[in-house]
Structure formats: C-alpha cells, structure tokens
Image (tube, rainbow, N blue to C red; front, side, top):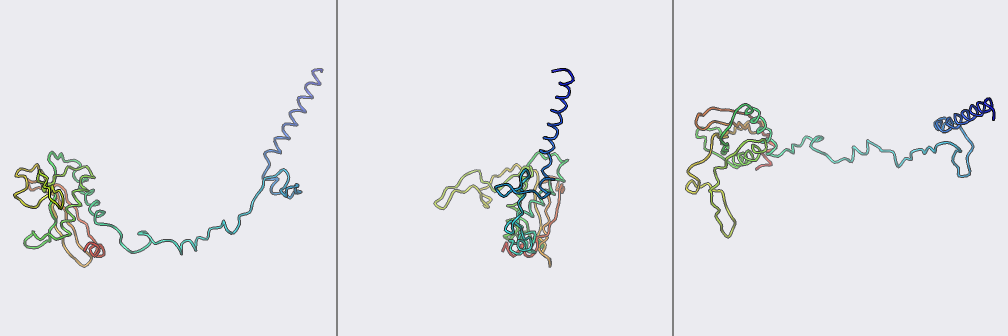
Length: 220
C-alpha cells in the first residue's frame, strides 16, 4: 500500500469512528424524535423514557393533612424541666470561663422568695437535682454534700444520701454554692439562679429563666 493510500485509509477510518461516536452521544435527540418501534415495542436506538404513574406522585396536601403534630407545629409546650435547667447551666458556665475554680460547687434547694427564704417545695428540690446533672455536663466540678460517706443497707434498698445533719460529713470540699429563688407571676415561675463564693459571698455567675404555667402544671 502506497503512502497516499495509507493516508486515505486513515482519514476514512477516523471519519467512521467519529460518526459512530456521534450516534452514541445523541440519546436525547433520538428519544425526543419519533422513531419506528422495534420488535419489543421500544424505540430503536433510543433511551427508554418511562412516564411517572399517578401512584408515584406525592400529594403534599394530603401528606400535611395526615402528618403527626410535633412540638414545632403545635402550640403545646413539650420541653421538660431539664431543658430549662440545661439552658441556665450553659449561661452560668459562660460567665465562669475566665474564673479559676479550684473547689467544686455545692447545689442547694431553690426556695420561694419570701421573708424566710427556707420554703423549698418539690419544684425547688427538682431544680437542685437537675442542676447537679447539668453543671457536670458543662464541665463544672460539683460537690454533693448529701453523700454520707457510708452505704446504709436495709431491706428496702441501699442508701448513700441523707438529709440528716448527723449522718453527713463535718468537713466538705466546697468552694462555691449554687442557690436560687422562685417567684410566681401570671405567666409562670421565674427562676433566679446564682453561684456564690462560700468564703467571699461574691456572686460569680447568675441567670434567670421563666418556666411557663403549662410546664408547672405538668410538674405538679
């Protein structure tokens, strides 16, 4: 084969390959133009395009009508007491970022804001218990002064906590106290929490949060 014939053959081969490539990369044009059907009922040489059936179409109006109500779509307040305490614990921890706390915090019962400041009800005790957990979650050291240091074993259970002063340790490793008051108003109960230095009485952190009446009803 001469040099001229070889060149002509190469050109013809290149054109054939280009035409073949065009037929491969034109499925959209083939699918959109009418073509004769093959023996299986599908267009020859084109992509099979299936129309969506009515069963596959999602009716959003029916979906919304039958959807289950959530805390984001209903006026009902589903937050638990721990959620309020968690927010307050985070607020307190932010104020303690620059404070070097060498000794842990003791948590006491929250009391009614009255002339005695010793009226602690079920809510006040629940707040104290929740704060022990939430303060630890934000990385603060907590001292549980109700731990006796002994385990009292009885037929009804094993106990390590007590409110009897005679059973508690005389020396406690406490540097700060988290305490607070509760004030009732028309909207709910205002909770005022603060962390105070035991020896200095200096308030190093404070926060307030309103617990709405609907939440108080659930706690009773």
